[in-house]
Length: 283
Image (cartoon, rainbow, N blue to C red; front, side):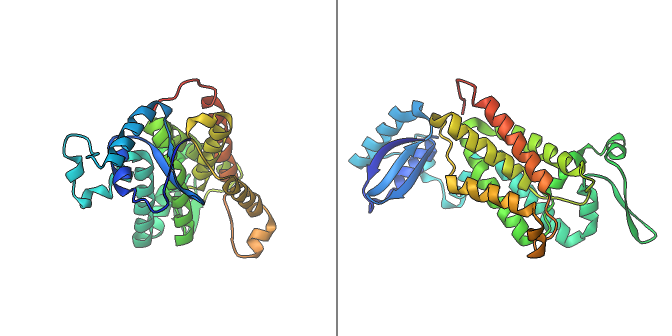
């Protein structure tokens, strides 16, 4: 992330921010003691950003040709979702599955667990992953990441997915985000399944993969535009370690898919290490 300019604390930057997004200039604005700081994601866009800044300071129109300035407010709220389509679709699927689970109960859970689940004589009976794959149920390798078993479970996983996913798509694009989601989702699910657990779910393994990827990119490629607060890294890693202890169950957190967290984190770190070796980045 590149610091461009310090602006007055009381400056109204709404028009400027709208124009920057309309021109597809990735940026961030932070509040600091002496004012508002404008940061740029891609240094190759510095000249275009400075041009818009000059126009903004002169009070000239900022929006590109084509009527984007006149778009109704009803469509503007969709802009962040359009800029992060993979993250948005993953988030939407989680919400849809959560609603379907509330409506149809165990039928949805049984359809999305990593192995087939049935009821025999009133008791749940689980098959094996090999049986499921042999019968064509390949979606089960990934589908548990869309299952959530409570509002807090869902909300926290969606917050981290949105925070990290948008950043990855803004800098490395949707294809990279999709690769991370698929590999970390499947990798985390297989890691959890390897422990003998079959009834689990959640996006947290993917979230830890995104954390590992963003953190490693920010450390190994400081100019790449990735950023994650160090305290957030410490908190999430401490949380993962805490849930691996017996104390977590004693204070009411129940069973946690720790191996899925760890498996996802490993996938994210491996991909972050690999891609941080690349000399060129594409948006």
